[in-house]
Image (cartoon, rainbow, N blue to C red; front, side, top):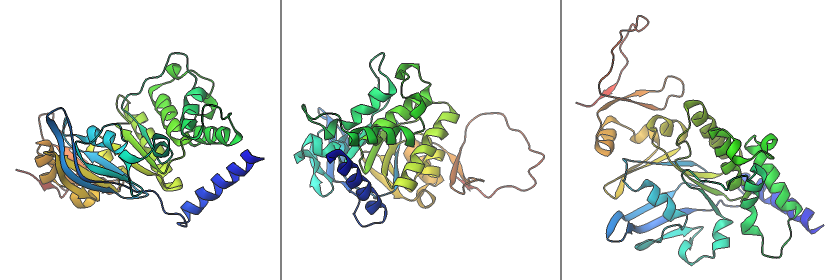
Length: 301
């Protein structure tokens, strides 16, 4: 009876949040400085993650994107400054309390050999369970819902190491969903995936944001996919925020040149209308017989 009431309460909270009756949790950083030893990676940075949207961190290799993401999840202690989760300093919050509000999927996670998909996703319920609290109907409901949302319910008895790269990443995302948090952080979730599976994973995250209003924060390397899926982009350079805003407002040839040291043209994605980066460099040049007019492009000399 108690478990049933818990499920009912959980569903009421979910639908109430979608109707805007319950505010979504917030995540921000103030005067944040991060580093390893005496090496400063991020210096006195201020950001506020838009609630209920997809935010993507971009920047050159080693600029601190993943370091910043890890610190937002309290996996890296700041040298100075603070991170606020739902208005509270995350450093002063209990681990279980943080895990009930924020989930993180690190880059290239590994699983013990022989672990099934169901067993992996069950780990997402740890923040709600104690040493003596038995597995409840509410826990089971959360796991099945996570497996269903990621379209891998039919794979729940397969071992994780037997899955394809895309299926394996879906299983890890299902684990984060089982935590039932408003905020999900993902460090390069498309790394090592082929083009088909990259789109599959990003489509899944887009649907989770659109349908369930999750606040999603990602590190991505592909500028074109970042522009397509993100509502908000934060570009990092020289330990600071170089620019932030909607992709269509900030992605320019000047930004790409300054942040990535690469010359490019910025065009318009013919399907989605989002910014599309065309890098300069060497390669074959083919005159297309179908192209009768030159596209209007922003050019960087």
